[in-house]
Image (cartoon, rainbow, N blue to C red; front, side, top):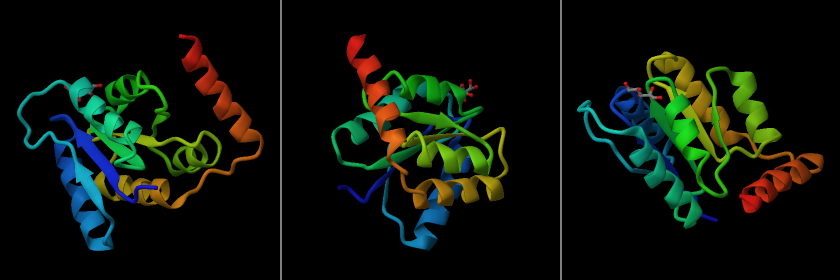
Length: 149
Ligand code: RB5
């Protein structure tokens, strides 16, 4: 499986995405940045889609999306087959969305969380593995819903 984390943002998440990159660089964690590359206005679904496609193709194993609230990115990401995106701003939710939902995308609000908290959430998202067991059956049910659409 790929060891590359995917990152993307819109202009509302650009500053935080750059902080996340510095943090990952310091930790020696490999990532690919799918943009955007400035605070100029762009449309968040475009960047959500680039990141989600990199997970669908297997190039990246998980991803982090940042917009102003994290919500637009999470809505866009969850339109993609096989993507389980969680918008979260607390550690309990990030921990359990990995343990129970096997979330493969974390969406953060660059205008919601401070940098210090966001970096802790990133670390937790990377470090926490899916618990499986009864939760695997539920995740399979999510895939079944997708396949019905
Ligand atoms: C951009 O102003 C803002 O709408 C976007 O970053 C995001 O928060 C959407 O959900």
